[in-house]
Length: 211
Image (cartoon, rainbow, N blue to C red):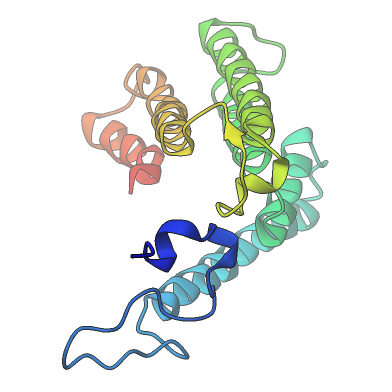
C-alpha cells in the first residue's frame, strides 16, 4: 500500500491556497474573510499614530512659538516619529526614542555643563541601548540561511538562533531599558526641596510611562 501523499510530498508541493484538512463536522470554513482581531489592531495603530503626530507637532510648535533653539533631542524625536510612521525598522526606532528621553531628562535635571552621577548613568544607558539595538538588528538579519527563511518557513535551511527565544530575550532586555528612564529621575525628584504632595505629583508625572 502506498504511503499517504502528505508523507512523501515536500512542503512546496502542498496546495498553499487550500485547506490542509477537511473541516470538522458542522463547521463551515471561511477562508475569504476569517474572524480575527485585525479591526482592533488597526484601530489601535491608527489612534497611536494620530496621538504621536499631535504630540510631535505640539512640541515643535512650542519650540517655534517660544523661539527656543532646536536641540539634538528635537531632531531625534522628529526622526523617531518618521521611523515610527514608516515602520521600516523597529530596533533603531526604539533606541532613538529611549535615547531622546534620557537626553531630555539630562537637560531637565542638570544645569548646562554639569557632569554628575545622573549624567554618567544616562550616558552609559544610552550606550547600552545603542549597542543592543545594533546587536539585535544584526542577529535578526543574519540568523537564517538562506535569508528568505526569515519570513518563508517553507524553505529548506538552518537558523543559528531560535526566533522565539531571540524575541523573548529582546522583550526582556527592552523592558529593562524601558524602566531605566522611568526610575532614574525618581532619586532627584524625591531629593527636591518640595512638599511631599508636590514631590508625589511630580513623581507620578514622570511615571506615567509605566501605563
